[in-house]
Length: 264
Image (cartoon, rainbow, N blue to C red; front, side, top):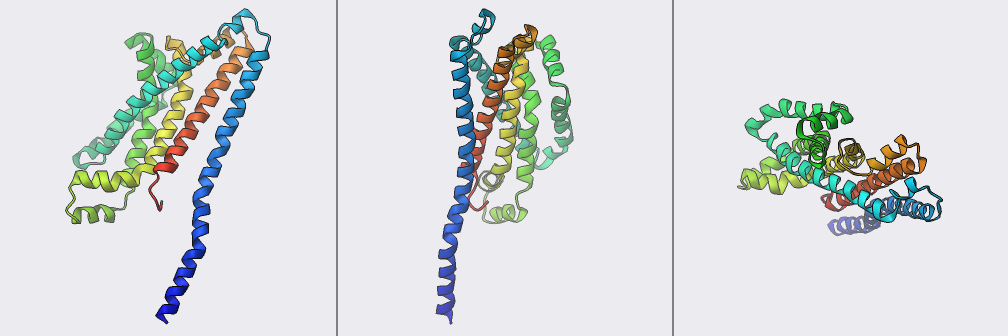
């Protein structure tokens, strides 16, 4: 009877194996659609740019050299701000889930909520009048505006870890730091990465406002198109920002899929 039961279990596991493999393949198949759409949109934009009849005011900012420089400026804003957000948001989120530091949670979250609740353009201008116009003020404004998702998701992810697993780690003689690094953080990774992805998409979109304080970026195309009534510049800037946001979102989803612990 025991042999029969064992054979049945083995047969069930063999039947479930293809289903599990198909389940793991589904996210990757879904991830293939977004980059294909982005690639099609980029090719369509390149074809339009190569064949469009543009005035001098339109052709200069949409020239490949000028356009690539504008995109690089935008990416620099996003990259620097993202690094600062991660360096500040993740350690601070971890700290606010530890012992006596939990008392500071309402204050810190209140400040972070204020940064995101304030109108973005007002935040940019306010910081520019205080810190001066340029790249630095734009980075500070972007960090204040996008740090909340990383901070909150880090806290939520750590607080959502099963307390029994934490106690089991401590029962095995692990230090508090070892439990954090080997138990809590790995299990909190999916929630934390979701916050990071949200923050990155926010950064890409909000960085367009940096142009109002001489911070550069693709917002320059949009504002120039609006001010001079040049639809080609307006639509090009909006399209490129949207494509960058989609590309960043896709990259974040790929990292989430790879970094997700097995079994979650």
